[in-house]
Amino acid sequence: MQAPLEYTAAAIGAVDEQWRIPLIEHYFLQGYQGREIVALLQLCHNISVSLRHLKRLLRQLNLRRRRQESPIEDIAQVIFRELEGSGRNIGYRLMWHRLNYIYGLRVTQETTRRMIRIIDPDGVSRRTAHRLQRRLYTCPGPNHTIHIDGYDKLKPFGIAIHGAVDGFSRKILWLQACYSNNNPRLVVKYYVDFIRRSQGVPKVVRADRGTENTLIQRLQVALRWHHQDGRAKENSFQYGRSTANQRIECMWSQLRRMSITYWINLFKDFRDQGIFDNSNRIQVECLRFCFLSLIQKELNSIVLQWNQHRIRQQRQNECPSGKPDLMYYIPEAFGATDHKVSLDYSDEDLSQFEREYVEQIPRHGCHDAFANALTELVGDLDQFEMPQNVGEAVTLYVALNDIFEDLGA
Image 1 (cartoon, rainbow, N blue to C red):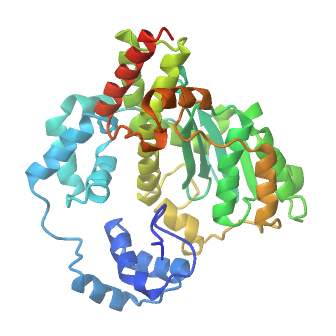
Image 2 (cartoon, rainbow, N blue to C red; image 1 turned 90 degrees about the horizontal axis):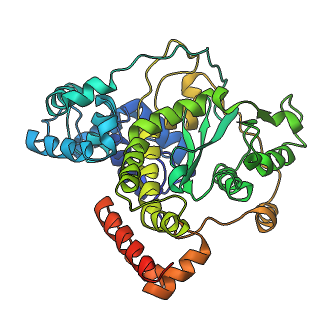
Image 3 (cartoon, rainbow, N blue to C red; image 1 turned 30 degrees about the horizontal axis):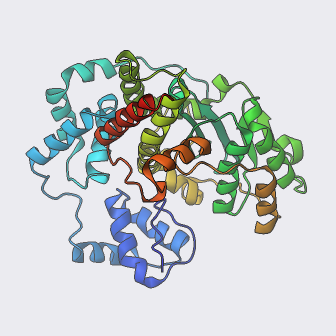
């Protein structure tokens, strides 16, 4: 049996009792409180546990919030490691979340704040910024409006990102890196995968008027054609300027701090060193092959971290505060309801749509023609040992560039 913990903390569906203890441990270590764990077990996994019994189980498992902090040397070592990568651009709260829920350390926010001020005082000063005054945003519940958009900051280096956010819960629904976010046949696959996972259709999809959204618009309208509410048919897809798509723009600003600035600076260094030229198609494909899987791995980690962190109450927002996963999967606890509408088409209908309109995402990040050329050089790419960190990726990138240069490519 496959454990229900692969993608998100709230794996929907009935779960065998044998998963009760692993689920309790998982949710506790992700920072959920007792009442939240009880609600998740009951509503998402059909497992009944009282709060009193849960506390008893937590004691038996030796899971306590107020336990001794991890050794200061271990905490400092991880902070130094994060500051060498994309962690240099995040604040102390996100750093605290990574320390506790990514690295499994026990550390308070106050300790994290003080250590960062000591270790990286210049970074603390750089991250101090003014806040923008935004309009009041309202959304009645999860799946009422999802916001989709492309992110182009890595496009000068051949990598494009596409994402989607639920307007009510702020849960990231997908975050995908590929060679393009303008190809409608690629972008629509993210949407098809989402409605397959959720087994329903969002009431409204909000996007800009780019050609990349044409197939999503057609599919969304078709799936909502027979519904009778006021946002059915053509009204189920809302166009607007990308800069006014507030929810997704907010996520992009967070993504820039949490990850993308690091990659931009790294690839700019390549350009300054003369080892990358975006007019050289071979170098662009080499960069995709070497780095895209690492970037996607980091994006997956950011999705998990974001969806399980606790959003504070905001003055310019009528949506509730809390963890995105909780607000999305258990909206009743926040005075809301799920606005997902029924999927009136079979899986075979979706498969037929995919066969006609969807282009599969390249397995190795680069275009198929380049992957075939690499196969001639290094053999079966499925058996090739891909880089596990940035250092290995840089080494491979330089080596491949040298090989193709020697071949006169």
